[in-house]
Image (cartoon, rainbow, N blue to C red; front, top):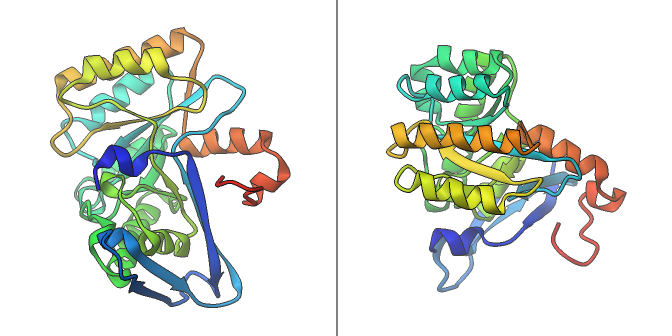
Length: 267
């Protein structure tokens, strides 16, 4: 499924039953032409089993979130941190486990500077292309490493490529993690134009995606990230972590939405 079509929308809550994080999940395929996204997960047990998916929020304050994927890397992560320090901005870094294992000092440094750490699987795995056991293992392994390095387990997952289905959602739910997607993307190949679009279209609650690992980061991207953060800060926006953005929006939401009740439409 083409990425832009896949991520169009505003969010969803998936809920079922489970006895806890270790509960079994039965995954099967529905007969359909839709391929891997037609798979279903069936958590067992009586307890709550939920994963909230967020593309953006809508707080009343001028808050936005910058999310950085695919690191850490020794070339680009320090440059991103320098940009954030320059503008007193916070970000959420979605870590690839094997890269975090290779550079735990960068993960620790990022956390010590106040930035949030999120789970981006062990090896940038497409969760829709594997079974329940694999999805759970790639997320759990990354979760355990980040908790050991920083002293705090992540509360957010981001599926590589923005691709996730029922089986991946169940794996995230088993870790008590919400799923964070994005509403804007600053690419390495078209960074200036992407930032121009964001500066024109961004609003409170926007979640922007950029990268400090993989093929995306380059000097142009770093320059444009600096321009993005500087320009939005000058315009009165404050860059916060995704968890802070969610908390700000949740504090303003009606009680029914805070507790995951759809009130007739997806949350």
